[in-house]
Amino acid sequence: MSLITPSLIAAAVVTILCSLLLCAVITDIKAHRISNRLVFIGACAGIAFNTTLPEGYGFVSVLPGALGFWGSLCGLGAGLGLMLPLYLLRAMGAGDVKLMAMVGAFLGAHATLNVVLSTFVIGGFLCVAVVLRNRMFALLLNNLRTMLLSAFFKVMINAMPTVDAAPSSAGKLPYGVAIAAGTIACVVLTSMGIDPANGYWGL
Image (cartoon, rainbow, N blue to C red):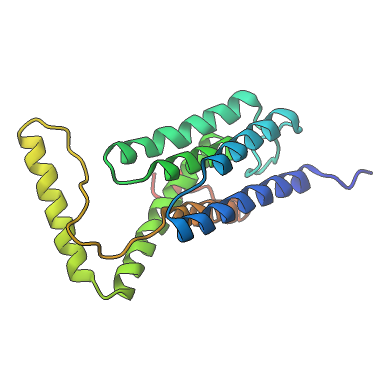
């Protein structure tokens, strides 16, 4: 009897994904950027794993296995599509969008939705933690008021609303950290039998 089971293969693939995310987190913290080469290699690896390994419902699922070439591409597209609006609003960097697309290439569209939901929740808590650590909560509220008023007036004159840079930063969070944490949270929740997109978040 073979010792290489679908669960073991899926665990190995998820470990590789987490290793890539760890590398992205390190570069994001140190240089405030995410390597295009890292993201490209990771996306290609995700597509390759999903194309060549035994099929299932995804590497993070109750029936571990590959989603196939098109399933992987759909995941990559979901990662891009879900994060791209924030990039267009200048609320997120291009590296963060591409990193989520890489995650999508590994996990597929449904799991990527789970990751995005987890990322937004964790990212919000981390941002508040950074602000409180820097004792700049009042500045955060002032920045938020300024940006919302700016967006409101742009809408009033029929201009494209954008999230402009705040006059003074209340603390910067490398969002690659939130994406990595959201991915890990998704993996942990799924291993516990919880699907964040179906009921856990009230959707």
